[in-house]
Figure 1 (tube, rainbow, N blue to C red):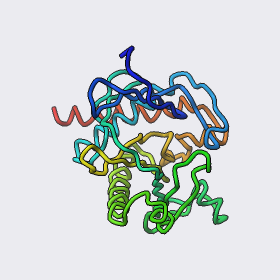
Figure 2 (cartoon, rainbow, N blue to C red; figure 1 turned 120 degrees about the vertical axis):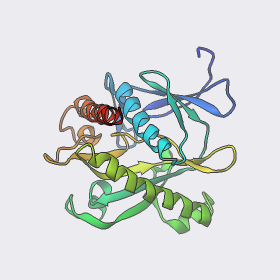
Figure 3 (cartoon, helix red, strand yellow; figure 1 turned 135 degrees about the vertical axis):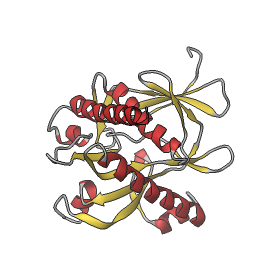
Figure 4 (cartoon, rainbow, N blue to C red; figure 1 turned 135 degrees about the horizontal axis):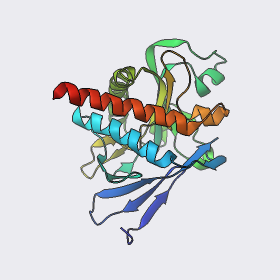
Length: 245
């Protein structure tokens, strides 16, 4: 492990080469960022919590045969994943008007959409990840029309699954960001993470945010919110295990 080459260091994780050609090691960091990395703070324990949450969700998706890069959690802050050639697109699925969508159209937060809205952003830090449409995507040759249809279908399928998953945790899924890539056979698979860093989640009863919006808006303790989500996930696992037994 000490000799593994650092391939990439992002806002919240490091990615290392392993001795397996098509596998990478991901290390989650105790970092919080906002405004596309312009604001950054160290938050002790956050990396372990993010890794625990996203590992649990990816394990669930793998069990449902959803194509992901996740292989296994290997330590408190690390996981082993399949190497993907990442597509420079951020795919956002929205169930409720919130965040930049509410700001862009001057809408109050909280109206729920009758059907989910899918948005695309060009993943480019130098350009602040601009909002783009399908014509832009094809002009930039990011993916083909068939591949974009596949990505959209996977995103909506995942939204359906996650709505139910988080509902079991007494959480409302407001919106979330996804990233996809090609495996060594050119199959499109889900990469990156699914966690409170990439999702907006609200407690169903109190409507309190339990995600990175707490940091963006400086309204509370992020670690406590992530701990609460981790606790609910563990409780769900124990309940399922008890029923199965």
